[in-house]
Image (cartoon, rainbow, N blue to C red; front, side):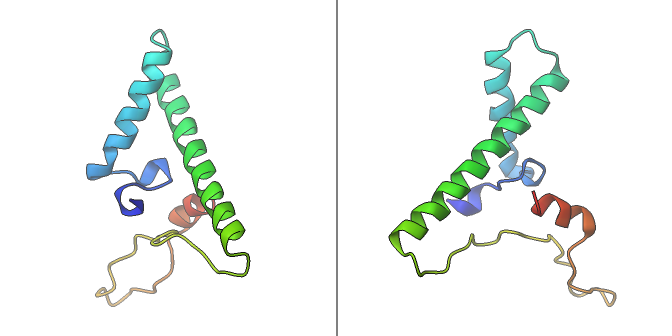
Length: 103
């Protein structure tokens, strides 16, 4: 289910942190002698690479099945700017979040 996870490592917090935990455990199991920073970096790279490949494959499949159709991913990209009751709210995506989404 798309809502159960996010393709960017940094956005899998709270209950979605399980994906980061499992990714770290997978890399640690493959490389038990690696220090934690190496495990973290490899886990993030593998997770985001797999997410990108899955998203690209899904879009290719949609294109093959409906060549003239339009498609996208629900809730992605997301700006995480839900403070719309704030009088200074602009609706703009914060620069750091925009940079993450552009990956």
